[in-house]
Image (cartoon, rainbow, N blue to C red; front, side, top):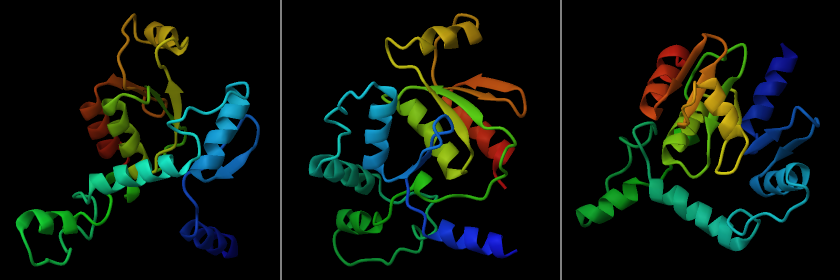
Length: 193
């Protein structure tokens, strides 16, 4: 009982993002530390791309991206945001004071085994699925398959010759599927409380 209280207390003060590398046992928090570790450990020490390397520019760009998303229907404060005087465009801007989607977790059932997501970073369709997995706090293993990656061939073998992402495999139910909208719907029906 005491351990549970300690875990809950530490979860309230958790720093995100968080990475736990099962291969090496390394546990890291913070985007900059995680990016540096991944490049050093898995890309033979190559320097991070300027788009992700720790810098004031990257931090500013990330904040602009978060702010631009605004509040969505998943944000409990969205509909209760205080109204503001002024032109409608300004009021809409002021109501978008909090980010949406994956920034706010939703209750879900934790699957016994992590799901497998075949995707690549540049795809907006894959991003939608990653956000749903994060929003529901469902553990998953990312199988990145960018251009030139040998994982593309692996994925095509698994899918009978088709390369399409996102592709989700759920070892808990035996479901394997394409199409971001269908995957998000499946995740909510299967794991949301």
